[in-house]
Length: 301
Ligand SMILES: O=C(O)CCC(=O)C(=O)O
Image 1 (cartoon, helix red, strand yellow):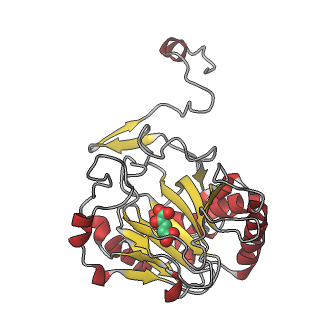
Image 2: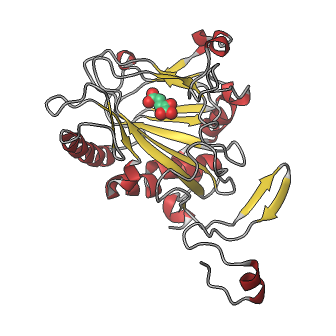
């Protein structure tokens, strides 16, 4: 799809002041941004997945289940990579409101990275400890952002996502534990240095959208309310930002990872202040040899 098909005009999607807020604070919360047609469709597909999870007894490639999940009382932590599970999620993420918002915020076509649906089930749905995202999937710049859509009304009792305004411009924390194992969360000493009083919790009616930059300190508390808190999240970067291979989740985010919304990849990138025009993407058909490329007689692997 062309950019014009995904985003007719950025000003149709967000105001200049919202974009300036995002740049300054590293997050946005847009109440009711996703309309009822999309919500109805997403909820119906999601209900089918919850139903299907009843047949599962352990986490796998589709579902991340809480240890107490049963057929009678499903308890899902996450639907993994929704865009790869159902065309409705794919259409929503690649052409729908989140793609439009990402393109409006990043100023052009965007590169999709990954998606997930965090359920945070009722009566004890697990916390997401304070962390930043970029260490999980470093990129060649810091443009990646994640757009979340609440599929149900979320109030303060349901453990909405919390963000620390401005922290996206600060320190990049070490998410390893003191024993050297990957923890995926900040350590106690670093958390002690945060001003948690300044944490902003992003709640709102169903269809509300959260945006947070990849360097934002964020997380959420356990959900002790009687209602699950489904948050559909999708991550995009600017088109000239690339995931750096062999670190964390990069390269293992599903068949659609790297897909461009609203344009074509230019293969241009800037690293260490130097810009280059990189070779085409050979990740799907395999690389040609340098001999074949230079003699113009290769077809790729
Ligand atoms: O679900 C949430 O509250 C936070 C999600 C999040 O930070 C993550 O999954 O990385």
